[in-house]
Length: 169
Image (cartoon, rainbow, N blue to C red; front, side, top):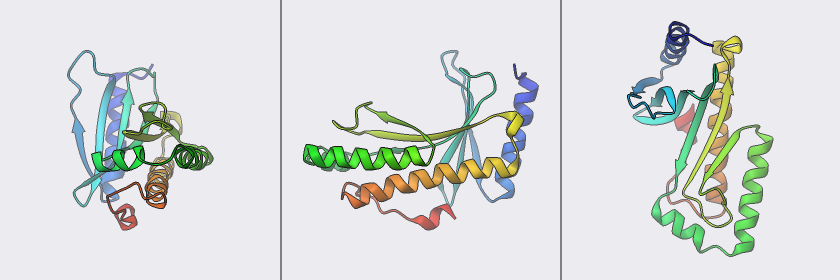
């Protein structure tokens, strides 16, 4: 099991690498005994949170890089108004692309054919494979998956927010 001291070293190394690359970092405090994470780092650029780096309590040594998308009310209404066959096509194309990108995907609620409030994409890394190169490979894969989601929402005229690919450079 990863000790608290080892965990702090891992977090410090990740923080250093992200800072070197121009990202801003803030730590979300996890004070409650019921919290599911040992730490949560919010990583941003230009005032926007781009992704999170999380150490779940449920795993001995896994670190998760993830990005979430919460649909605005107007987008949820637009999605609910789609015909069922269009929703199925959208979900099929979205899931097919995300599977090929090899990211873990979670929907809330869990059946996106009915409605979508939140989508999260994630990838895991383990300390024995942790290098700056591997961390940024995973960061880029997560951000590309998020970009893919945004482009699919745009293709199906669901998203009301503009997608700026320059934000991720």
